[in-house]
Picture (cartoon, rainbow, N blue to C red):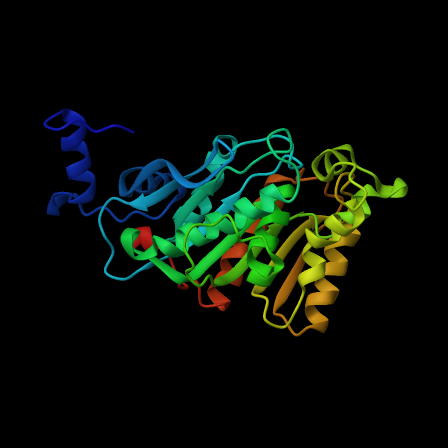
Length: 311
């Protein structure tokens, strides 16, 4: 949405943000929230967070038009596509629920297999996280309330960005040395065991394409698997997975849930009965987003009650 100085659209924006007293408007429904999101937020597109081998990693920032009194929590989104396809532009609308929760959003592009095979995407995810931490004060973000979010391969990267320690060696390309803290992970049917997807019984072409055929591929697959890094220091995790997923086995999320529970990490597995690979009913999607909201409230990332946009 573009507002030109002195134009009718700018006048309309002023009325929406500061309506006449006689209007007595009390926004409450989905339409009202969508209008407020469109008028209260701005996009800072294609912010460069990393340069590697002639490739520039970029992310889009969704920020309030007016500075907030206190730093905002921020969702860091990673798209899916099996590490071989997809882009941040394809999931631009996925930012909306997090904006409605009163969060800023960083929507990330990363290197796909055709540009650079594993572990490049993991390196990019870590560098995007560091960029957000480094620029938090500049953009009014709360570096202690970063939530990583992703679906499928993006869920894998959300987990890896949050779980891996600096000693794992994925941070070497990242500018800066700021501490990075993730408050929670929202994992939509993400891969937690890459090595399993290379084995004959569960082989997936996209996983093979990303890992490649190097002699040490099984070792590399374990290095880029979230299950390898489960520990008591991991952030809280909310996982959503269809129990009939034909692409990423539901058992992977069950194993992740069991490992996190054994390590004492707060987590929840939200199974979708008869759900495929992200193929959920409208009712399921609404219930999942409400559960995500409640999970983030419980973790202290966002506040309970009505959307901050309506307060």
